[in-house]
Length: 476
Ligand code: NAD
Image (cartoon, rainbow, N blue to C red; front, side):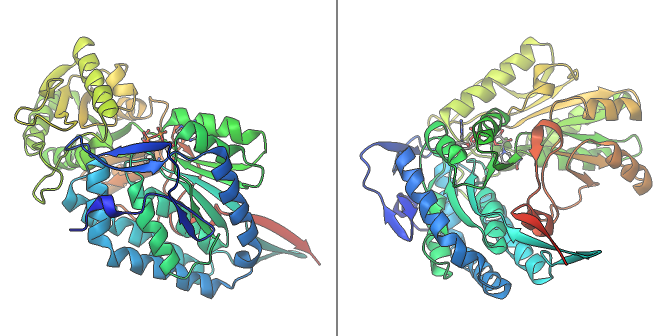
């Protein structure tokens, strides 16, 4: 397996790598607590250089024909596939995602996203439409600033870069400073795919310095941000000064609604698997399990049985299903929420705030299940971003929908029922951007994004591609 520390750590600007800065940010393996690399702490000047390179590359890149861009985007997908093992090992080392999950999901979802975008462009997704005497054309919006989080370091970057490049935009990426190493491999893959210098650039650094400089830069036409609602709000404020477009993919507190006619044990197993996926660190995690009140105890028992199969262990071991939180700060935050759940009177049925026995190093959190959670409790309202599931009893279908919709978020949801019409009717009542019925599979070409404070805009496939364009009406 390739040594992750060998991944390039510098900025990538106008086709050149630079790693000269003495002001650096350590990258820590959350399973071992070892510093495995360091990245340059970028400055406003680095952002300015990268944005100017992207702006200079825009006229030529936006004038290439669709077929040339489709070919390059597909070559990026092939490049990611070729370096899959190295990418997976790098993500496991930088943020603790279990290696088997990394290989299957953290690498292959981005490949699927790339292919979905290329297919959409090839199928004419950005084609001209005639309305009366007008031709309505879609043109690339310009220079895109992409800001991404640590939990799916490759997927979140590719979900922005692939459609932006396919649409004819140029890009400056600021990866998360917690998990920045994957971006070095991605830059090499994009360069090897034949994408010209300046079309894709990477500037490393912190959110308040590099992220805000990107959001503020007058030559950036659009910011595409994925991360916390707190930082997304700040990015919107900073970007407002130059009236640029802002697309936000933010947090979630998604509900899995198990109706009274559903296969309860199957529904619970799927929900537990979803909520503990990626060490409980997915924005669309089903972290609230809503069950009929008279089946609460049965559901809780099934949830505990399913959770018991998640044993915290070294994420580099292929048999591991759950690894550590991605940082010490994240571990402390999650443990704080578990304590809060106990204080507020939820039933601690599995796990808890104590350290995982037998693991002296690493930011591990015990996979935790709470029962008898009331919808107004902190653990039922706030995004925890760790392996903590809340089982919430409801009285009837209306009550279930009210609870499911009763947070500031609206990213995802699930419905389980033996009756597909009934499941669809409830799915339509959920105020969320994507809803899975009876364990429906994730689709990397279907639009992904949030209602309410989970954000605005959509990623993936045809609809994700459209986000990176401006509409122009030409009258004849
Ligand atoms: P975060 O908001 O702390 O950081 C995300 C990115 O924003 C990082 O690159 C960070 O450096 C940058 N940033 C932070 N402050 C900034 C500022 N003031 N200005 C500009 N940039 C700033 O989030 P995180 O901890 O890396 O990721 C976890 C969060 O991301 C969770 O809330 C999760 O739900 C969300 N998320 C959402 C999606 C989605 O698609 N909706 C996907 C993954 C993660």
